[in-house]
Amino acid sequence: MPKKTGGGRRGRPIGFKLSEESKRAISMSKMGQRHKPETRDKISRALIGYFKRMNPLSDEISCSYGRFEDACIDEWIEATREELNMLEDVMTDKSMRNSRRIEITCGQNIEYFSHNLTPELILIFKEHCQNNGLDPSEFYDTLEDT
Image (cartoon, rainbow, N blue to C red; front, top):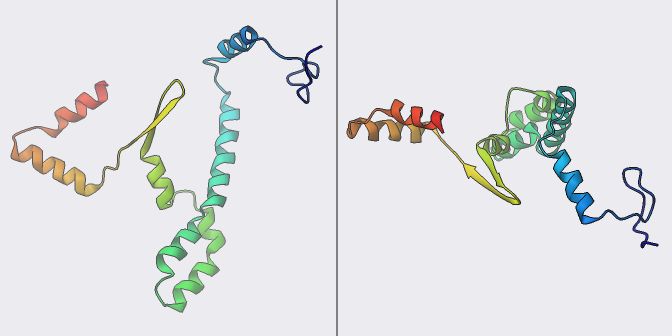
């Protein structure tokens, strides 16, 4: 009898071990499956709620402006803490940094490509194109093709 490994999984009896071939077959059958829109929305809401609790906007504002020795700012932050944390259309610096990162995966390797395009970098790019007689829209077209 196989060695018991804990509670049964997916309706299999306790102690039952899948062969490598069965594991591969299950993995291949799941490849490319997508969640239903309702499930995706539920996951998104749960993740948004989790990250809002982990890095609330009110904490970021108090860290940024709390160093000013102004009692009015501290009082305002405390008075509006709940309201600030409920804002949907304001992103914290941390969430803006994360939204600029693209996850590139190949097998088990995950790399992040950061595209921190600030207004200053865009202006420098346009100025460089203008000085060298280049059309910036040509670069945008090549990016859309890839």
